[in-house]
Length: 147
Image (cartoon, rainbow, N blue to C red):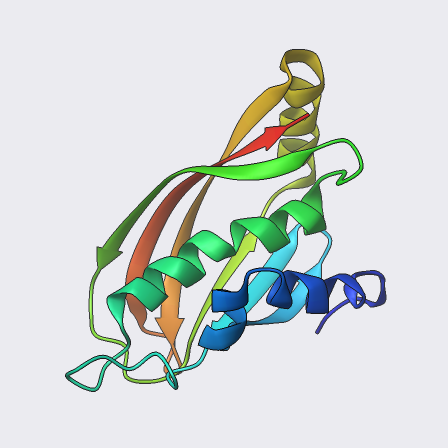
């Protein structure tokens, strides 16, 4: 479910980067400090009939953008990605999802540091899961909030 206050942002977030739109990535949940993103199997199939590794990487990196809008003041800051590490654990043969949640205190601390220093990192350890709930990939990411 997408909270009402984020409904206007979702089309922009899904369409601003054209390859995201072509991959079919969709935000399926968005509320304060929480986002869930879906990556459909079609058109992201590789030569052996499983999810293309680059698409899995992309959805793991992409979630940082919607998380920024669900968590931080977009009138004062903008996000960049600093580092993404992915571990492929099992082939994905269905649509997959990835979701992230940040705590209120964590968001306040990151935003406070960015106010004081002009930038602050935030880390997320995420799991990309198939329709059965099995973990296909582990993502360790670092994004940065900048003034």
